[in-house]
Length: 131
Image (cartoon, rainbow, N blue to C red):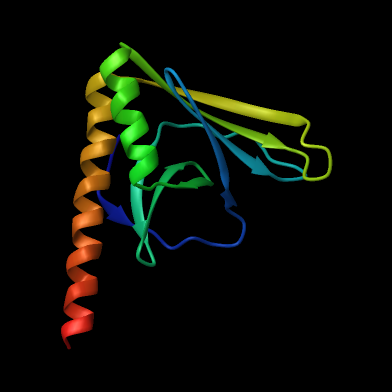
């Protein structure tokens, strides 16, 4: 389910560019006019020097703040949720959403992959600067 891999992000994909931390996980919001709901688990990917959560054709940028929040949610809950909501860009009315529920092991795996990718990006950056 959680795979360490690189991916090419194409234009038909959706980027959930806003998020809301909640006690038991995260809500990501993507402003799109029309989106078919796709939720087949979540994985962590690295593309173009950035780290993303991915489910189907939906991506959300993953950063230290989000990873720290997931870690706190994992420590306080048995089930951690990640919800992707799609809203109309003009009025922000939610059109569709899907939720992925994870246990602590699955959440820890996401945080572990994020940490590994982050370290890899830091090493690549150091190497590029030193060349």
